[in-house]
Length: 156
Length: 255
Image (cartoon, rainbow over the protein chains, first blue to last red):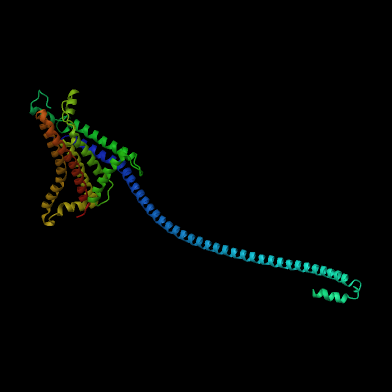
């Protein structure tokens, strides 16, 4: 166990190793580690932010959904109301049309009846005159008894 | 196992010898130098690869490994060192990984490398640099120089001088203070290096002894000691790093 020049050689080797480590090994590795640390921190922050945003969006979507549901319900109610109205209107129109047709038919029937009555009356008159003529032969002059005949016709 | 033609004493002695070139103080232990530089290069290759491909995105295998160590060391430095220094964390990382690597080669098959070396005609080959006192002292003296450098840089020359002579007992015991402080400062590198050296040297010696027990029982003690040693290896690397941080932290603090 004797001290010799190896001591100096070891000191030089040691110094060189430390120098290389300090210059070329330590800085890149610690830099990469620091950068990764920053990156991870950023990532975590971003995730946190994303989570928060998602929460907000969810809340907003819920609100929108509620609003839309309300709108839809309102629209359905309006449509129902409107359809009821339309049905009522149609019913009303149909009833009016029916009435109108009925009235027209009634009027026509009356007219028809009147006309028939007129015809009948005229024929009855003719028949009556003919009958009376036959009975009275020439004793009754149509011209002389026109007033009487007209009176008879009115009474028929 | 020991070669049949060696006695136990010769075997142990053989394992404690260094591959040395030169005489006296000017000798240099080639095996220690080669293995420590080689392991230093392994350390740098792994970490330089990690540094080159370092990305803030998803890290791959090497980067994960490097980052675990870097983060571990960085945490230790942040916990015990309160100044700001670009040097201290890389220094701690280098110490931890390099010492760990130099310790762990001890767990390689104990006779393998000496035998390989013998096969190519090299007589001595100790692959564990940290059981060479020169290696541990080399590191601890470098740390000691850093301690002195930072003490003077932070406190100023006069501040450091005042600290050396006026603490811990005030101005009436100046010479005594000075002796105390010198011992205190010198104790740092000595304890740093002797602790590591002692652990590794003793561990290696026990491996040598284990290699001498009969082969059919050697694996039980060998395995037990290797597992225990694994703990010591990591612990010693950690202690060396931790104490370096603490000493440098003390050098940065004004009293």
